[in-house]
Amino acid sequence: MEKYNKKIIYVVKSEPIINDALVEDAIFCGIDEYAEIISNGTDAPGTLLKDCSDEFIRQYQDANLIISKGQGNYESLSEEKKPIFFLFKAKCPVIARDVGCQIGELILDCFLKHHD
Image 1: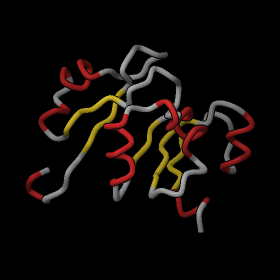
Image 2: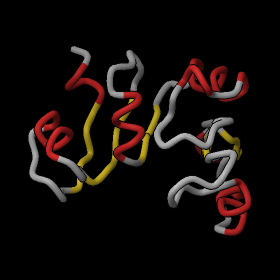
Image 3: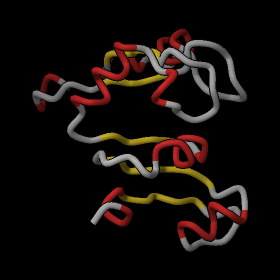
Image 4: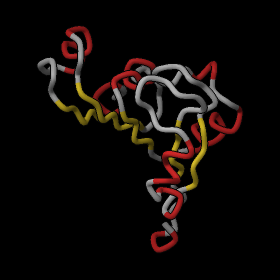
């Protein structure tokens, strides 16, 4: 992080939901050695900006690049006008059709595709 003079924020859920990571999980994995860990302030699947904490919203608005993992985040953020790269597995026909893939495929989808 310091080597490249970049600020890295790693965002987790504030409460357990499905299989999403919490702050203690990120610390256990050593992510705190490379990034500042914050919670988005919600326990919703995906990232519903209207429900997120003020701290998360500030970081989100200031971000130059966002890597967003999970289909729930794709569902909740894909219409945002931010530099977001989505990494997820397409689990349903609606999302598979939206990104032009088969159900079960792993996807890396760039915000540029949606926001030319």
